[in-house]
Length: 301
Image 1 (cartoon, one colour):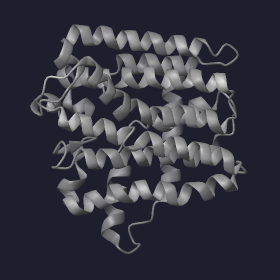
Image 2 (image 1 turned 90 degrees about the vertical axis):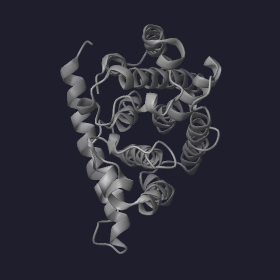
Image 3 (image 1 turned 60 degrees about the vertical axis):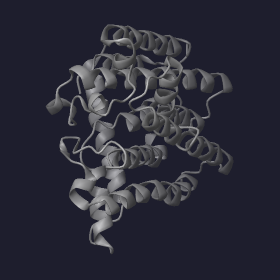
Image 4 (image 1 turned 30 degrees about the vertical axis):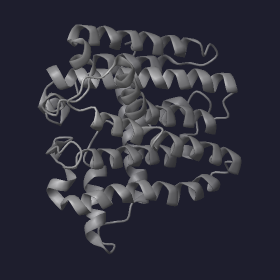
């Protein structure tokens, strides 16, 4: 990576911005009914690298330097991501005990409250975001374009669809095509919301949007394959979640389907493709997005 220090600095800056923004958006624990707001805040402020808000920031930076204008978008994608994790950890799904180094939400608050905490986070995005974006003087048509992207990418043709196929594929032999469907929808589609969403608000051209959509796909696939690899040879303390949980659940992963070495080769291929996508944005400084892509490829947590 060309500039590790700058990337670390951007991580810290965006994390501080976004956590401050979410603290302002999410009701305080004193507000009745207190238990649901405790549960929501427990998961949203449990830590995490905030890669998705960082992608919103870095992608928007290609077009506009006033990040405050779309801070609420960065908050929204992290809230959607956290909702998906809370639900993913439930006994009816993966039944995980640990997330971001802490007991999962349902282990602390019970299954019913955890389910409703996820529902709250998702609903809050659609409740609060339109008004905040209108106040930033974005055109209604631009806001509608973003919400169409968001809703489409996290529903049954996106994140939810990927999760469904992931669940029904457990313990079965599946094709590489099915595995790609799972990863593309369960992971890449939300990255697309971050990257393409930022481009929408940055008034990107049609060509730039297509390039960034391709980048989001390759970045997301890289991220998920590395995640699969870390589930095999990662460190629980570094990851903040149990290593080997995918194997225990007999889940469909690249290492399980094609072996660890070929999975690493596949990750490298997606990394290379993602960097090639960025190089097509010839008039934009994409160095830090390239550095982030390299970081994802070598990450240990």
